[in-house]
Amino acid sequence: CTSLIAFRHPVSGYVHEEYLVDQTVPSAVAAFVLFRDLMRVKFRVHIDYMVFDRDASFNRNFRTQLRALGVDSNMSGANDHWELGAIEKYWDTWTSMVAAMTMHAGLDATYWRFASGMANHILNRTPTSSNIGYISPIEYLTNEVPDLRHLRVPFSPSYVVQHDTGSLQPRAKAGVFVGYPTDTRDGIWCTYMPDTKTIQTSRHTVFDEHYHFLSLIHT
Image (cartoon, rainbow, N blue to C red; front, side, top):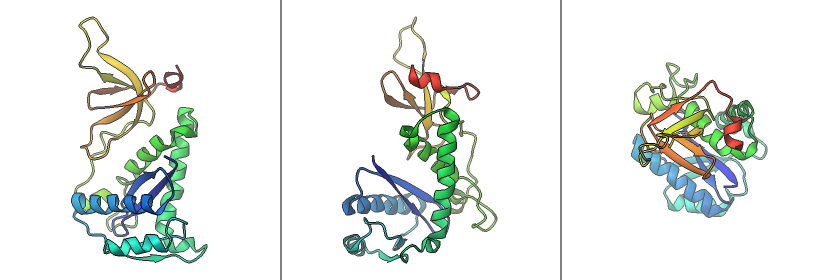
């Protein structure tokens, strides 16, 4: 992917991210449809209005396609980012978190997407002063306090149980924790396997959150 687009539900503060292969109108519309369907199916929230900045992707063609989907829209003024203050604040926090995660792990910017997903996952479960009772976006939408016991230190070494090994082979494979899979319950994790350059998703994972993990990635 080359860019990221985020949609924020204005009432709860919930933010959904989509990764784009290009900054074209079809890609932006497809990303919005995914956000709209997620809000409708997962949270029973109907989206019929959207406010956005003056990015090149949000042109007249984009607004026309939104209307065809039954969505009214509005644009902020030129250079008037204060009109989108909530999402701008999110981006400021998001940027700091992504930078902190990658720097703490000693990684370069090529790992930003993993850090981005973890930051988004955490922020949607973080209490916010914009919600009555200082509750998180997830709690606002589900009326349930999120269970945070599944959270792990970003980019920690992780060891995933392998179920197809022989009796004398290692039962677990070492990798690097890179995030939480979407559309699954909490307590399942994504592990990057440096030797195969693949992602393995499993709940049978053990973490070493106190170890410096840079060597695992570059071996």
